[in-house]
Image (cartoon, rainbow, N blue to C red; front, side):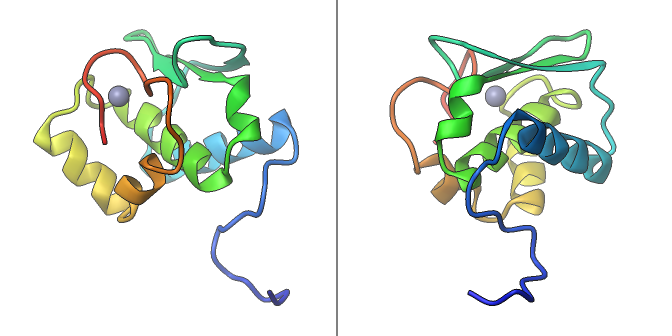
Length: 119
Ligand SMILES: [Zn+2]
């Protein structure tokens, strides 16, 4: 590891603010404007997103690898544009995170959000 890493790669989540700053980074990059982003304990899934622009992430994500957390962020923010897991959804996801399938496989257990599994 050197200090000149110019990618957005992160070693681990610092705290909730770190996570939120990553959400803000991706929201700007993806040109979406979530009305509100909340981090809260969620027992059955990693994240959710409502049609009125509220995006919620499980605080449990802070204990997972950043690669996985970042995938969840991009996935949920993309739902603000596309509310399903269609081919279009997957192709845009791939454009932003070409390795999303690997990232999604970094953890097992609860589902990412309601509906279809994306693995
Ligand atoms: Zn989804």
